[in-house]
Length: 301
Figure 1 (tube, rainbow, N blue to C red):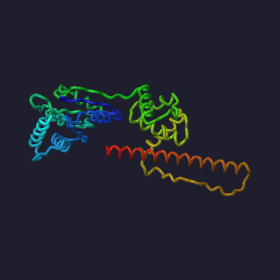
Figure 2 (figure 1 turned 30 degrees about the vertical axis):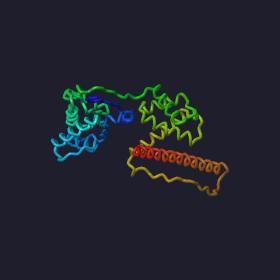
Figure 3 (figure 1 turned 180 degrees about the vertical axis):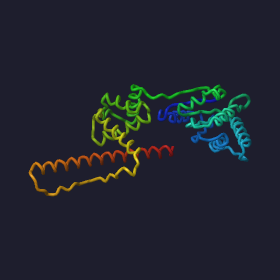
Figure 4 (figure 1 turned 45 degrees about the vertical axis):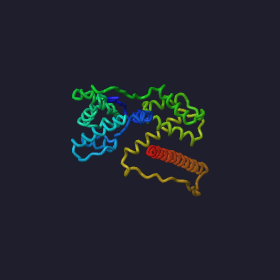
């Protein structure tokens, strides 16, 4: 391969996952792959990051030496029968000068064969940058472009069912048809949001012992998510701490039977409210643990 491959999409559409799956299927014997996650860097810092990523040594810290050592490294790998692939994630943050530097590096060839290719992965503004008039030379080096759109409702339904079946789902709990409409309306078809909401919905169904997940269930979960977003946007100093109550004392009081019954009903109602809050806190604690497990699993891989 030669030149640039451009992959764009709004956050959460699966760009990074797509690239990682692609990398898994590439022939590592023929290809040396480097992944650059920090993209707010100038041309010289980009070269230093590439040195760290690919593992080539340089003698001096100046740009001329960095370029010379990189070119020598590329030629050595070409003699071993290997090409270099650099994947830049969040590439919308790259300064134009750095993009231009990468373009110049893709001109390196050995015996007329290109030996260095770049995948630029980022949000839609990256495509606008690459296609701007002052980046014409870079645009001419594009060999492929791909944009990841949000899923429509049918694609989203197939996506959810596929993930459930891959996890061993046997049809329980069932999903009411209208649930998918509610999920799509809230998540806008963004896979990351779909995953998060469905995790919460399944946990809600498990704790509530539901065999059917209906619109009432999904709307309760969505309301919880919205409440959390509202709390996060509020100054924590203005939010009173919640102290769970596990019991409510009902002292003997004088009054008519109706008054005592009303007080008892109020106490039961308060206990139910406390139970609901504690269930919500339990769901949140489990979800936080699941998120942490995902983070550590990702690091382990």
